[in-house]
Image (tube, rainbow, N blue to C red):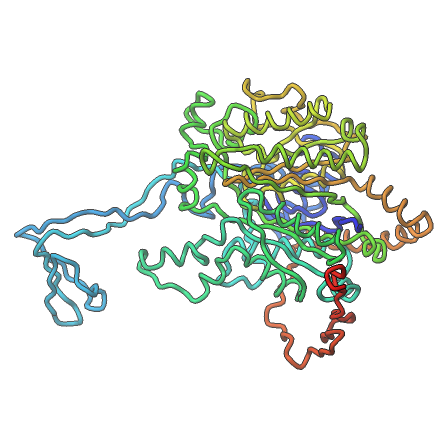
Length: 625
């Protein structure tokens, strides 16, 4: 069976650019020193347009933290919604008002081309000169008056201040979620350190797959949100809004405009567990040998007034009023709005786009790709009969226990007990802190795990809905690299009702040096969507690859990998000095009918060295005796 290994990863979220662990290091900023710390600030400064001084000179790595470090810190992670998105204190609204005619003043004059058709009940029109009409109210009428309102929820995990994803490529009319998909997939592909054209020629066209989507769809003004609001706002529906608003559109855009892929594609949706659902598809495809390259991702941009009010109506989000009550203060602490496993009252929405590139182990060895981790398993289960669609159920017991059991089968009891950690769903709701902690504690007890290191990155990033488990995976790769587990620093203490007899939940970062070998990613979603993934450290992967291929082959792989690593670092350096270079292939000549040749054994496509095999073996020979 082939081993799915992660050879590239990238994207942008509230902590910055994900590739090369820069975003992860923003979450453990108090534990990062030296070059890694200065590079993190350089990466953030580049994203936030702070890389150059007043005279246009590039700020050196030695001076970057001194000069713009505080701006980088203040403009990242969970914070009050910035006016670059919208003013949370001045949300446009329409107030429905009933008017009755007044004998002294019951007429208005408007342009004839603004006259509604048909005429509202209780109104008559009289033509005037100059293209005007007099509208007279003869009875009661309802009108909408433009007004403004204040959001009860004003905290969110936002992209770094000053960063505009639309500016990185020709993104006209693209919803923000699609912009994040293009940027994240491009970042992940370029982080591999091997040109995509080289990768493409090493595999058959149908041995590539892209699984990506958005749980919410694209709901801003350029997507489905704009389409449903257009007529109510007095605007017109565009021809792009419904097409660009679909939930699977991120995968379609990556195929068409980043990769030019002819392989398998799709989007599995599982609410807040959607990324892990898509990762499971890719892992199963690579294990089976059907695919050799997989690009998996998710991007959500749900920070809009309408979505915020929708979740707030469910009492799911933490309001400003509840933040004030939690702390006994007059001014909400927006930075600490998300408090997994602490005294909390709701989650915090976030925007994020994250993608990973996976190879099978043979292709990684052949091309010298860096193996950042392996994904051994992803398990998915439903909850069965439920009291309500949002209430938790037993499905997460199954997924987590299966993931731990599968890791034990690979590496043994002691490795799981002493060298594993877990990134919890940790949504920051009172119900989650009780129910998820009970699951974690009981599974730990079943496998005799004591002081299981647990974190919840939503404390820093907020909840990016379908991309939330992608945020977890990106951070687990950082934990493997630096062997530091982010603490849940936004809580005062672990809440009294959290089940933590066998869990280690700390406010401070946890030093895992020598013990960060297996990571479990736990995700729960509305409707009973549960998923748990198992990721394996690059150190364990190296041992597995040496055992499979032998020392001589592995040594030759390391020689190739040195060159690949240098190419990847060169890309990282470019991103720290200038805006992220983004692959966007719109406008390139598409393949036509004349570019495809078909025989009864294979399909050849111009631009691809390898052919697609049509000699599929009979999978049911025993049924055709």
